[in-house]
Length: 441
Ligand code: SAJ
Image: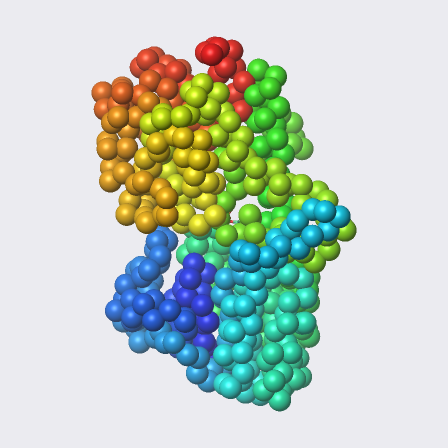
């Protein structure tokens, strides 16, 4: 199948890199988003999100004349839906007394509805948004068929999840293997023709529901593995062991690779996607459910650690380093660091946060510092919440001159304990039960 013009619906972390990459490969792309501010920003060649290489890609796409942003779709050869699928904020499901989160599919529904007036025979529609199993066949196809055309007969319909890692999206979009699940083999083939425009990794064709499961399985696998690492951090704390040392030794085993404990699992993928399985089949997913519980409760464990280190949180001034959901990104969504700050404040601490990737972030209830210096100056303790490169490169010899704090709590294994101790700091580390043996309260 040949594609001259495509329409990408949803211009966020996935839709925008995808749209600009297609434009860079000579395809005429109409990018669609419901937010007027995003459309204006993009048409000026500016961007509304931080992702290495993206600004340049969008500028080039606009200048080439191959990319334009608009509020509404138009006729095209292919439509790509890349809108968010978060979970519902105010509604939960329940199974055997256990509550689980529910997928909010409203953006997918309205994106599919917006395509209906423009859908023509021979078109291809691809859903990229992470979705519960059977969404393409049972939710999207019936909406598109309101056009009078039949999915898999009159138009092609496929599911192709994005699997790129924030921070490396522009490269991974091209190099990663790509799975394309069609509602018919011909739909999968049409999807292959589209993505072969730029994908250098392997392209695997399958059916739509398999592709949906593949995406959810990848992120669920990671969530479960992080949960066990977090549980190990709690056990090590209890038994006076340094979990980081234990993990590095255990990982020498040829069939063991343990992930890193931390303050919790954030972002809009790994902390959300496993719930799609739980919602779809709560009776089959106790492991997935409990892993979510472990990771969601990790900020509480971290606050408990900080409370033990400081003896009492009430009135304590705490400098929180990092609010992003993971290292070296500016994305603060579903961030465990954010939750740790709120929980500390709830317990009476006065927290000032410094996030170098978003210094002017406006987060309800969080006081932001305008610099590292301001953040740490009057603090009683420094808490490292995100392993940003610039934090792990901090020089404790310099820091000691800029802060009153003598206590450091490292929740991500970002600091070298010995070096910080040499500069007179007492350092506690998540998962290092030895911290408390060295510094009994
Ligand atoms: N985390 C840990 N310990 C670890 C690894 C991660 O606590 O050992 C935490 C991070 O700090 C962060 C969260 O988990 O809070 C998620 O970070 P991540 O880097 O594991 O994943 P994401 O959410 O940025 O991206 C994931 C990726 N999926 C997999 O690696 C299986 C990416 O490839 C997907 O494209 C993306 O989800 C997505 O959009 O679904």
